[in-house]
Length: 389
Image (cartoon, rainbow, N blue to C red):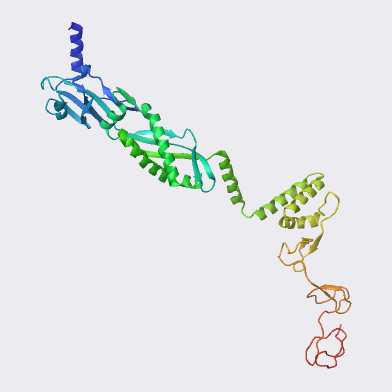
């Protein structure tokens, strides 16, 4: 051995008297401590900090796992290493072993998201496509299992090295859980927390085989396709309008006001009225007052015809069956005047033509109603006097 090799070996032996790892990266999960020729000096000090675990690997097998604390590595106090033969030259000889430090802290703000939409059957919208994204927190729950199943012989293992594999597993479990829960799309936002907990439990069943554990799982957003969102917006708008008939009347009044303010708005006003009448009787009633006051011009110069309500006198469009104001029946029965024979509405007390009272005379003897001009009662035969006019 040359002089320089002896100096190098002496320096390495001095270096490995203290085995510790200070992590300043923030994303390192596993770090293999550099040991010269994998030989650890007998009596070396091992320092394991909080949120760390030190794992000794001898000839490819996990030998000892050290939790946070300070340890002196000597022959006899590492029974597994002794059994595996790491001390084959005696307790005063170096231990041939690899040392891995595993970061057991929580790795937060790790992102996940669906690369492609998830096809689901929804009770309200039928088949829909959902996209989702969020974040999760991860920690190493079983360091020995993690080294065996994931890290292997990597000297430096970071979250980026396993991020894509974890995302695929999360999206798979997310899709499966969302399909099993069968929550309507409109109710998803109200149950993000409950859905996240259910999905976290399913994810941990899969991740436990890697020695990993998801401590937190957050759903930030579940979005629907644009066309479904537009349908939801329309449904919300309809709900905000309330009574559709009142909204249509309000819109009709606005149209009349705008037409009255424009020059030459008569033709436009007539076209608007025509469209309103086509919608239905309710909108026609909304136009009745304005049409009666302004003369409601149409393309041919004809005015809208109205008739008063027989009960309240409110003007209504000709042809309507009930008053738009009081709801009374517009069509009434006609009866002739008892004197001149002019047509009067049923129940009229005086004739609008001759002014005669419409109350029929009664027999003074039996109170039976007498016909106009009758001289004798048709029931009892008593002589009567003509009814006073």
